Image 1 (cartoon, helix red, strand yellow):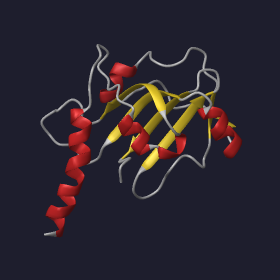
Image 2: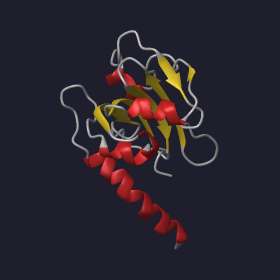
Image 3: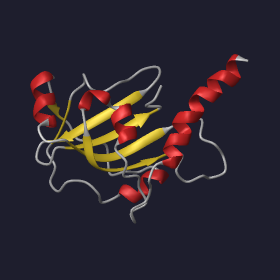
Image 4: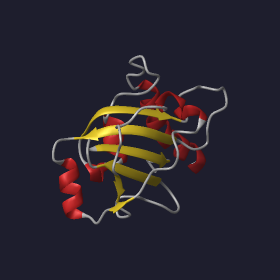
Length: 149
C-alpha cells in the first residue's frame, strides 16, 4: 500500500504541471507559480518561459520530471541574492538541447553575463537544481530534475 500512497502524492504535482496555462504561441509555459515553488530561495519571478519533460505526452510516462527555462527575477531580486551569497562567473551548458527544450532555443537575454552560486544549486540524491543568473537583465536560466522532491 505504501507504493500506491507514494504514487498518489506525486499525482498532484504532475497534474498541476499539466494544467498550467500553456503556450502563448511559443510552445512553453508562462506561469511562474510552479517555478516559485521549485526555487523558493530566489524569490518572486516574472516573464517565465519554461518547458517540462512531461509536456509532449509521448504516450510513455516519464519516470522523472525535468523542467528547464528562463524567468526574470522581481526588481531587486538579483541584488538581494548577490548580497547574501557568493557568486562566480559561469556559463550554462550549450543552448537548450533536450527534445522537450526545443521551444526555448534562441530565447534568453542578449549578450548575457552569467553568474551562479553553488549555494543555490542542489545536487545529489533527490532534487537536482542548476541556476544561472544574468547580471544585466536579472534573468535566471534553470534546469531542475525532480524539483518537487
